[in-house]
Each structure stands twice: as structure tokens, then as C-alpha cells.
Length: 319
Image (cartoon, rainbow, N blue to C red):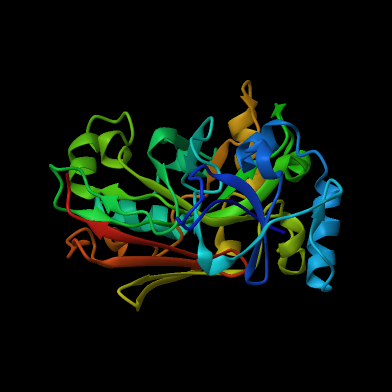
């Protein structure tokens, strides 16, 4: 299933609150109607009726009416709604550093080898949940930055709470997957990284999620033999020109291992976002050895992951 938060296009009698929906082909099925439930609300309630949602998805694909809770659902054309981030203001956003090619490239730019510690444990930093944006939302670099970069990533969203989750049990806690663009101000980041504390203002201003949350069953035929790893291609385009290409299966650490690490001595909650880190070649930092040129106002960045869709954002002037 493809699950979303969406707002119908403005018009007479339209309200502007986001609501939970199911995407079937080129249609959006509203779930919950007047209850004003979001996808995050549904996750926090324990994903009630998930089997009924799957049945609804199958029914609509088979040409039957969209019914939910004994009532006809409102149906919108996909191009007649505004897609929001699948999970807006998630409880936490943890972003890992799990693709070895990207780690090697970053360390090469700094003139060093990959630290031995990276091969011992998966590591992450906390991003800013309040800065999460969705598809087609504008991206504004910090006013002090002249080096805006994209980062091509996959993220999973937690659907069931857990603490000290074993690697082999981790997939039971995943509600689905989405695309993550971990926007970075490289000049700001360069100033901060020498302190050794990790990313701060260089990644504080924006992170894009979308276009929807895809449930794991939709990816099962591409499973790569490790928990939360799939043989699916990731690409990035800037102004329609492909700049990056990689594969989800290139992860050194699986999402199972990331979840096990994140949940060690800490509880993961529904709606928590866990990013993979950047795929190899998945940013301008790698592609230009840290020299740029960087993104400019008017540039359109499209991240595409097989089965997950396309996440598109346009860069606008700071301010």
C-alpha cells in the first residue's frame, strides 16, 4: 500500500487540514472522513484496521467502490491533491551513516581512511523533526550558506513501539519506507565538523520525506536477504539531469541493524523516522570532491527510488 497525508486542492468549501489517505493507481482514497486523522495519528493508535486497508486497496484496484467503516469514501484524483510529508513532525528523526561508499568518499575528501569504529557499530545523528517538509515544498538554505547540497537516502518509519529490538525482529516494527532528502549546508557543516560533536546547524533547516509511505509487502519480491534491505535502484536528478545512482542493497548496515542499534536502551515509538544515510554518489559533496558547484535558487532536485516514487523539491532564495 501507498499511504499519505494530503490536502485537497483549494476550492469552494474546501478545508485545509491534512488527512490520511490511500493511493491506488492515480486516485487518493480518504480514510476517516470527518475524523481528521493523519497517518501519524493512525500509526500512534497502533495501525488499527490495517488488514481492512489492504482489503480496500485490493477492492479499488479490482474496480469495486471505495468503502471504509460502512461508508463510501471520498475519492480525489492524485493530481488534485497536495501531498504532505508522510509523517509530519515525527517524534524523532535518526539518520544513520550506513553506505560504505559514501563514508569512504567523505573520509577521502578529509584525507583519511574510514575509522575502524565505523565497522564496529552503526552510528547516527538526531535531525530536526520540526524542519521536515514534504513533496514540492520549497527548500531554503540557511542565510549564511553558499553551499547547499542534496542527499539521496531511504528512510523507514516505525509502526510498532519497541525497546532493545533484535535485528531479526526489526521488520515487525517497520510500518513502511519512504524517500529522505537530508539537505545539507556544506560550508556551515564544515565549520562545525571540526568540533567533533556531529551535524548541527548545517543540517538543521530542512529534511524532505515523501512522496508516500510504502508498506514492506510492496517490496517483498525485491528482498535482498537481510532485514530491511531490497535490491532497488536509487537515483537523483538536478534540473532533469541524472547526477547520482546507487542501490539500496549496497547498505553495509541493514535497517534491521539500524533499528537494533537505535532501540538499544531506548524506546522507538510509532512515527519515528530512521534514515539510511546517503547512498554512494548520492550528493554533490561526493561528486565534486567537496568543491561544488552547489545548488542554486531555481534548481529542482528529484530523488527517485524504485517502488517508492519520486520526491521533488525546488530550491528557493534564503530568507
